[in-house]
Length: 234
Image 1 (tube, rainbow, N blue to C red):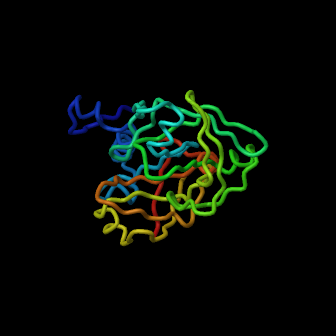
Image 2 (image 1 turned 90 degrees about the vertical axis):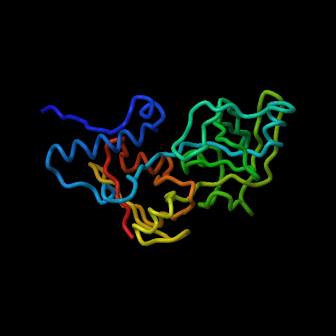
């Protein structure tokens, strides 16, 4: 069977469009051509994108300078789905309890006002951490760690967390789903290992695109693939 993909998008636009958005458009077009029902997200203002957030860290300018040298600024390596966010060229080594380490921990930019390391539960076990499930930015009372870069070490007294699964929404998306900032939703990932996640925290901002984040453990548990159908349930 041959499918014709009719996207009103120029070549220059395609080059600027995140891969996840294109994959969503392809899935919906294929389902239309096959005469199959569309997901609820097809009728929403924007298609839902679900991405696995691998272990990474967010750093302040002071931490970046301590690790990479005075005046150093992060260099974008790969632009992410949310506007302005990127994976940086720079990476660090995380030193956990009992001197266990993770090398090449990617830094996500731009810099923030606090330092934070986000790990999956499996990562934490391997390092010897007992980390809580927290929303990004809520680091009070969490474990700390040592980071090592080419210019030296940087000690974090707190900030190592397992990120709460969440969904970024533009206000138009929140209106469609009938939710508000910090509400909880469920998210069902369809497939051979179909899983429904409870307590997906809604984060609403004018700058956000509709995107849910789960970690590598959660992504592996549900067998998430680019073509997986995912739906948000109030």
